[in-house]
Length: 82
Image 1 (cartoon, rainbow, N blue to C red):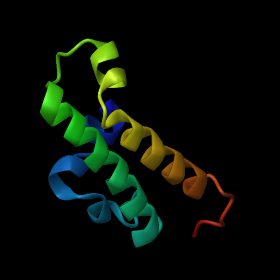
Image 2: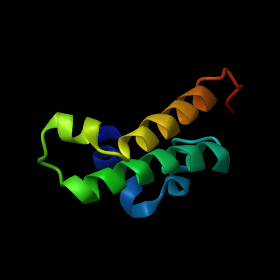
Image 3: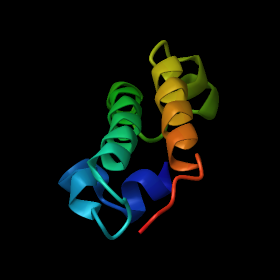
């Protein structure tokens, strides 16, 4: 969470702003943006100080996991990077 939001400011500027510095193309940026959006929905609902289990038990947490899995697979697929 800290890397996705605190260190990159994707929540404020969008992942596409980090092309080509962090992401190769719009596809990569959009996949990571989906993770950030899903995570922000949970954070907006619970706030930043909820206990860990509240996040894991939140009904939207499955969307965080699913989008993170898709992004991980795409970013680690071995596709050559320029």
